[in-house]
Image (cartoon, rainbow over all chains, first blue to last red; front, side, top):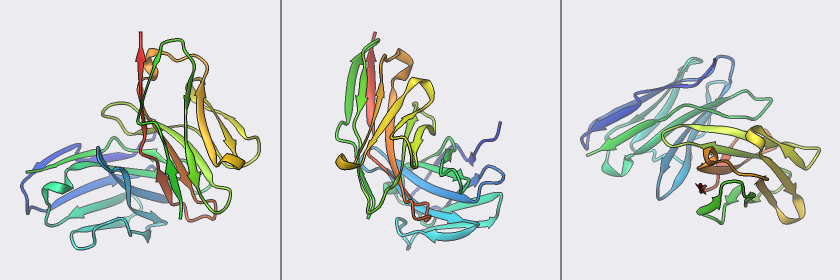
Length: 113
Length: 114
């Protein structure tokens, strides 16, 4: 059963530390999305890729966040330095171009103290 | 710019009652429209989608949605709710121009009374 895999599932860190979240999209999917979910803001689109190329990262705080796809099987979201306001659940989703459907991972819950 | 509005933050219905969750969108052309469901601690799962054609679309778990262009709406319905339907529901709009940028609404949390 193909699924999007995210690691870590939970991360607690201290303010100022670097955080890296990883995502393995479903094999064959060529679009990858990063979303952040909080109670206050809901689901916010941070960045998305198509065929590994970044198409839009306008939703991401550029000074501390970065997103990359070093290869087709790995997408990363890095926060450096982390701040308490970054505490949220970060979701990765992938999809095949033609159907437009997104398949979500189970999320990485980040707590920054 | 794309936008999605879900006017109801919380909805409570009795088990067996009918359900309608509202979604309004803003997009310059005919959008791709989706409904997703999220159970606690889980990612989002697709319920149904509309790209073109028949404006009444059927999804999984007995859900359906109707695209109404004149009202810019894509409301989700279910004739008889089950206790297991309690979850959060998200409407999303995707650009039909091929940019594949998906914007989600703020969600509607459904509570089902036994």
